[in-house]
Length: 224
Image (cartoon, rainbow, N blue to C red; front, side):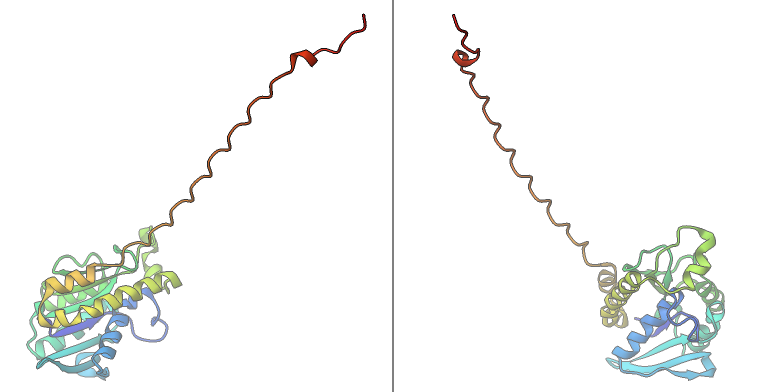
């Protein structure tokens, strides 16, 4: 059962549309779906919303500490309201997944993601849920920082938004603790578009039959 939904990103208009803010994009859609506004709460170093779903209290959090310090925000809220790590879901950008795909995962390495790294440190465990929103990889490790701090292409943004929509449909299952059902929805993307069949080649035209030579007229008649 998930009680705290966290979206990771960097605050401010300069970062709003960058790949690193994919977690913010998802949480904004959650807040809209639950009709609950996010407001700044300095006690938890972030934008916070509290709502109730089927009698259960649900918290939404967008840390405003910048990515590498977001664990301070997550841990402050979780500890005050006695929310266990396995009751937390953190949505974040994922380099190792292509745009349009998303994965749910419980525990595991932070894989170099600075936000997850700080959450690991502040919670003292990796045993929390992650919603990994694929943003793709630039192909070269040295380009990663510039990649996540830039806007995705239009095609990639559309694909990321589609994965966010799919994860949003899994929200009732996440909040009910039905993680298997949520996983099926999140991991299932639309099948690739079928390629149109190749047009059939026109049948080869029948070869013309060779003309019969009239041997009688093959040579000119000669005068005697």
